[in-house]
Length: 221
Image: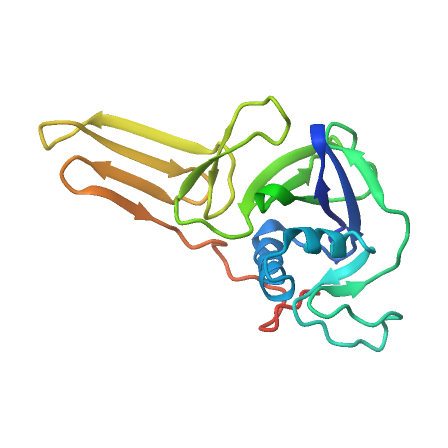
């Protein structure tokens, strides 16, 4: 079953330019794949990756696409299976989704960041998660707002959850200072601190279940 998806590049004030992926995936599968493509195919050149993704529509993305008898066009090495060069899509996050789409992925080129949006039942784009193409060591990081002038957002670097953070602070049982616990409500990863032993970071496995699609080559459907 296909998962119609848009992938593209973010612009100012919530605008974007994107292409169609017929067999897209949820962030748990597509984000790790895009990180591999960014590293292995484009040597961490985000501008080059954005240009290549916008060059055409796609059946699916893959790190090592193999020729298929039923595909009219040859695969693009290190990137995936092209569909056609039909009209590029330009839109804005505040606009209706417009069509049978499930996901939208936007590259923020200057920040090396990928933001995933999910189509709601009301035909609007809802921010699902934000991901560094190069994962950082910190469990929680503060990011600029997607729309200029908005409040900063706190992002979990394990699952990409945005502003889904619980923080508790209580007087420490050590007799001085405070014990704190900051946790992601989506994946359960957490940072606990106390004045005696310092910081303890727990990173939960993500995704919680092994992907059911794709193979060892990094190829999706």
